[in-house]
Every structure is written in structure tokens, then in C-alpha cells.
Image (cartoon, rainbow, N blue to C red; front, top):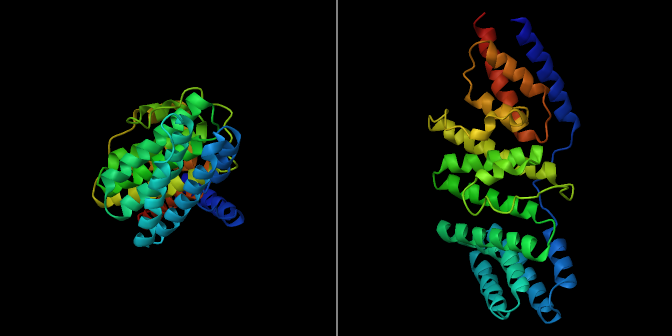
Length: 303
């Protein structure tokens, strides 16, 4: 075993100890209900408040039933949400947008459960654009985590549809943004996901930044394995991955680790950089460890 291989073994042991000490992050569940409740009671028209609270509550019930695959109950909540949304007068633009932001994502999940992917994607886009307008036109705050989750759901559906490159681009862009807070990569996404990233600074992540990273990273690992199983290991590169600040992120190094042939000294150097880099969440780290351990097993089998 080479000196570098021994160094890798030491780093793997150190990182594994670090993983064992850290608590497992749960998938992100940003407190959007609190954001909505604050907006409803602070800037919405008084005559619309009860309606918006009812939409929110029925939307939560819809989401719960759809996640449990209880589609008849979800459909009943769907009908209630639609009926309530139709009672909001057209001139109440703020309230209309807020209703869309709250109700369209759970309705998208119901469409997805019904195998209506095109309708689900349309609803996710409607909610995303509503969030953008709430921020731009009404000064609403803290919608970035919500918009990121909408992109994650879109990426999941696109992967299920077989559009792996588009799904990968969404995951990588979001992970770079979550690690660096540089939004340039988000502006390279297809419309409407490229909108609303100007002037993003001093973000309030509700302490959810690493959890959001965990969710995106988990999907990225799962879909990359699926892509590799289809013998498409060397998919198209994302242009911004060549930028220095991106190459020093966990997602940038992991992506290179996936694409680089485990032959020659460059792979060893890359593995060391990956293990020594910051670890904002576990999924990429664990998958990278698996890949490096496989490489070391190969090295020891052929002295």
C-alpha cells in the first residue's frame, strides 16, 4: 500500500469517527406554516384571513393524506381547497398569491400520486412564481427554503420521468447555492426556477440550511447511482462546476469523485481533498467514503 493510500485510510477512520459522534439530521421541514401565519395576520386583508387559514389547514390535511396514499381523503381536501381559493376576490392579489403558495404544492403531490406528472410540475411552477411575486412585490421574507423545496420536488419528478441530466443539474445547483450562498448557479436553471435569485443575501435559514443540504444530497446520491446503473457514468458536466469556489465545495468534489476513473494519482489526491473538505451533510460524505473504500480495496488486492 502506498503512502497516500495509508493517508487515505487514516482520513477515512477519522471521518467515520466524526460521523458516529454527530447526530443524524432529519429531512428538512421548514416552519412555513409560521411564515404563512405571520403574513396572514400582518399584511393580508382582514376579510380574507379566515379563508386563508382554512386553506392552510385543508392543505396540510391534503398533504398528510397524499403522503399516506389515502387518495380519496386527499381528493376531498383538494376540493375544499379549490372551493375556498375561488372565494378570494381577484383584486386581492396578495391573498391570491399566498393561497397559491400554500395550496399548489400539496395538490401537486396528489397529482403525482395519481401519475399526473405534467399537472404536478405545473402546480410546482405556479407555487414557485407565487413565492417570487410575494417576495418581489409585497416584501415577503424567508421564502427561499420553500422555493428550494419546490425545485427539489421538480427534480424528483424529472428523474422519475427519465430526465436525469435535468434532475442532476437542479440538485447540483441547489447544493452549490446551499454551500456557498452564491446564486449564479441557480440562474442557469430552466425557467421559472432561474427567477428570483437577484440580491439574495443575509439569508434566514431557520437553522435548516444543513437539513436542506441533506435532502438535496440524499436525492443526488440516489439518482446518481441509478444513472450509473444505466451505464451513463460520464454525463454532461455543469459549466459552473469548473469555478474555483465550486471545486472546493463538498458537492463539487463529490461530483468529480463520481466522474473520475479510480486509476492514477489524481484520484488519490481528489479523495484526500474530498475527505478534508467541509461536510455540510452526510449523504455525499457517506457515498464518497464508499467509493474511496472500494478504490482502496482494489489497491490492496493488486499490490
